[in-house]
Length: 323
Figure 1 (cartoon, rainbow, N blue to C red):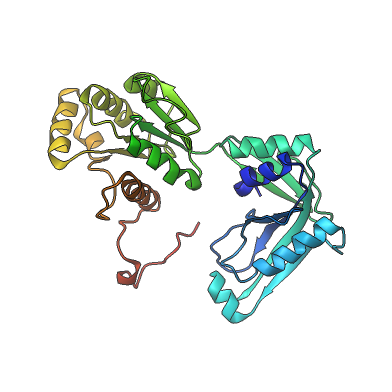
Figure 2: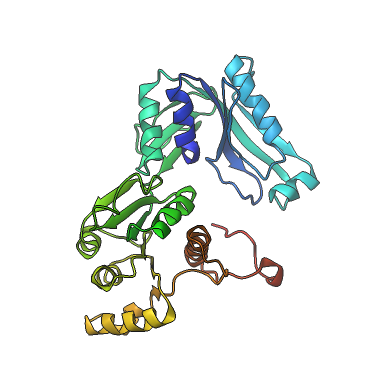
């Protein structure tokens, strides 16, 4: 449910009630996990999905029944045929256990958690498996018969340089669940209007901002400015942080010069080895949007220990990363 918090809260803010079907149990391996949800508001808008597509119709009917008050029991199983199970990624066949709930615009407490999740902040809700009632999680652990939905604070993506490529990268990375910050010292470039998909646009010297940002191993830093006065201090700070991904845009000649300047600034070779530069996978694109796709593709590949490439040429590799 928290994975579609932004869309659910948008419907609630319009005064619509929302029926939500949440995955409570997965039997077999699946592309969606426990806590994934599909919702339908009382205007008929469908939000999210809970499988590869084969049980969405059943989930839709459950959500409508919950809204209409005609649902017999909140928790049920969505059965899958062998063919449907394989299509959904449930290689051993089986079923999904789900619970249906109704969210009301007047429930301020639940909406507060949805807003936190939509902003990339930590949030937690409990769903009663017998009634489907949703409430704010107010105990250290879920009680028996309750599904705990919890999301830790989102990983951060700090984009250095408020250029067109930064705006495209913010748009491409937003669905991946990052809390996105664009930072640039130039007031004419660092505006929210130029970067509508960033959660925040900061006017500051990038090196100083990155050094003080408390970057951790789930976070990513992408330097896109092409200006050494911004790039070098920002990369010194980024490579000295615990960031899980550090990348910088530029030609191979720019990369070679940049690495020499970083060495002169005291960055050790072990840290330089972490630098993804030139940034992105080799997709052949050139426009800001195409470049953004190559960057987020590399970020996803790195996060899962993959090299990228064609799945059709990786017959022995699993397609989905498994927890």
